[in-house]
Image (spheres, rainbow, N blue to C red):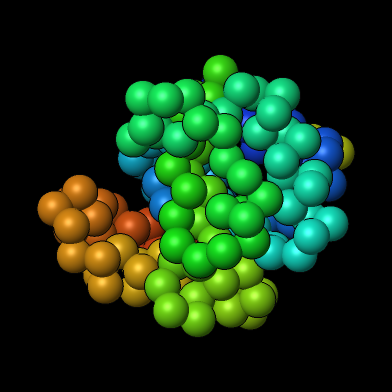
Length: 164
């Protein structure tokens, strides 16, 4: 299970009706991989209505650009744009990705996700094969370390489909 901060951010986003897909370490954790992450990575639908809901949550958690010491809040233009918006919030780090890579946005993830029931709500989580491919492509040391764990989790799932 994700950390309490990650859980709280997911609950806030879901309650506000934000359309998003969880990726990264939180997606791995939610799908049963024995990994730890302290942040939440999401890819959101970039429509004006959805960005307005997302901005409402970001205001509530006092989101500020992580690499900027001027305490700048994310703007609508940033969230409708391309690339990554890396944030610090009262609930912990939140990485809001407009797209993972060129053309790899919310719509691209539409056929590459699982729906996971969390209490009374359902969240979208990138599926394990896609997460493995994304981590392989990223090639960062932290991603390379996670790959064997993700592959083992997928292998276990394939042997025992009841572990979903």
